[in-house]
Amino acid sequence: MELRTLRYFVAVAEELHFGRAARRLHMSQPPLSRAIRLLEDDLGTALLHRSPAGVALTGAGRILLHEARALLGHADRIRAKVARTTLTVGVLGDHGAAKLADVFRREHPDVAIIVREAGLTDPTCGLRARQVDVALTRGPFDETGLRTRVLRRDPVGAVLRADDPLARRERVTTADLADRDWFQFPEGTDELWRNYWNGGEPRTGPIVRAVQECVQSVLWNGSVGLAPLGHDLGPGVVVVPIDDLPPSPVVIAWVSDDDPLTRDFVTAAVRSY
Image 1 (cartoon, rainbow, N blue to C red):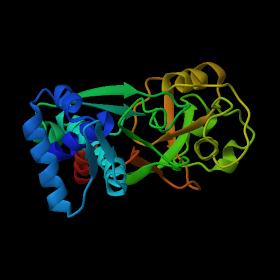
Image 2: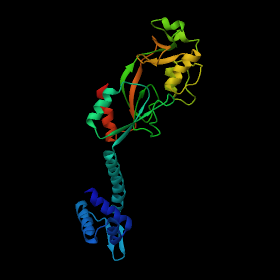
Image 3: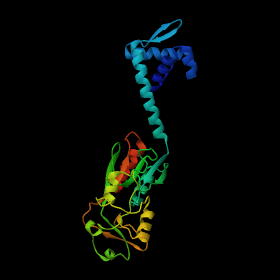
């Protein structure tokens, strides 16, 4: 049972006429009739009732029509995914992806990567809205409907202005920051995500939507917040390790495993981190 033969059958079953189906398929009628006969012989059952007025589907024919449409649709989707030459990657923050880029380029030299940098209000980088194929991001966030792999876990620290009294300490705790304004994400931001970056407590402070807005909030307002250690946020700002918070996971997230190019990117990411 070949896909080509199933396409022939679907055309006949939808047209209910061999002549019209042959014209639709841009072929002559005799080979089309022979192909359907061979399909019936292969299945061991009649698919069509033939008459001078045309054809009608048998019970088996109606079943095959339903299944063949689904199978052909799936085959078309696979063909489109295998043939595509671009992959859109959502990125939130700097995760040191140079090795991943090198590995993926070597294995897929003809694939163009479109990078979409996400703001802090959507840790999935637009995955649920299908704006990206895969996201290189941070957790924790609501993973409902998504597939994820943790690539690395980074300790975090308090983001402070350089002249802040706490900036001279080697380490701080969330209790040290309890009475301070923290930069905040807007209403509607993922609750797991917002709670983590608030140090697990309700906070007040200016609303931010991007990393640079966080930095400017610290510089201008003296507010505080959290950031992974090892990131250079620029002059006038320091990140002091914080003792009582779990590390932030670097996560790769995607929607499903039915896209070969996305699967290859995930595999390359797991090998690279």
